[in-house]
Length: 248
Ligand code: NAP
Figure (cartoon, rainbow, N blue to C red):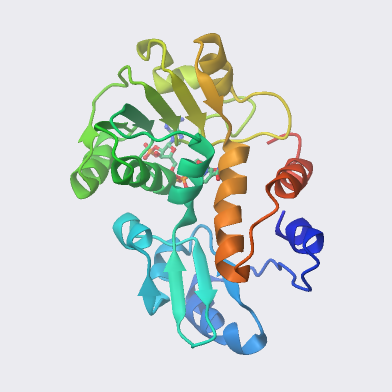
């Protein structure tokens, strides 16, 4: 996705996968600027360490407590951001201001989405999680409302990993309790066809926001941070769809 975006804009940049063991994370990150890197995307299990290693961080990264994007500016120093939050809002393509929302899942993605909804002015954000203590902790930290059971809302977001594997059973998410949401977003994505959650949401009459669009939009925000250039969204969408293996 990033490689296709660089090529489309004629930028002589490359995007490289660096597998890094946790014990070498800080040392590796500190060596990157001197090796010509302008930034990095950071994923599990390094998102907390990425925030800790940074000299400066965005309000989103600080509030969420994790970073997925590092930038190495010309002036030196490491900047941390969390583009999962902004990417979700961009993909949502409408303001959640004043809306009632339900977030399923209280892992890293649930935390980013909950913060994004509240920061964008949602009137009420309920958080349900399979392990209730995690939902209570998240809700308490961010000012959301932990719920023991999924409940109806205008905007529903699946931020669990249910749907990642073909055999996953979406009834584990309590979908029968959710009524008919106006908008439903599944962070889980597939190369082709709908995820079980997106399929349920379509049948319930919701406008469906796909996880692939969230993936593209969070990447696009990272791209803009590093290059200062508008990202070619359609090129990124096509490339992302082509890169996902059909069994995910
Ligand atoms: P995580 O921190 O590992 O959290 C996983 C979440 O899924 C937890 O809330 C967990 O509940 C829940 N869960 C797992 N199995 C479940 C089951 N059988 N029934 C009910 N809940 C279950 O992972 P994450 O980083 O938040 O990511 C979550 C999903 O979002 C992943 O599929 C990831 O690929 C996707 N994601 C997509 C994007 C995007 O750009 N589209 C961005 C970020 C994440 P417990 O706490 O009870 O274990």
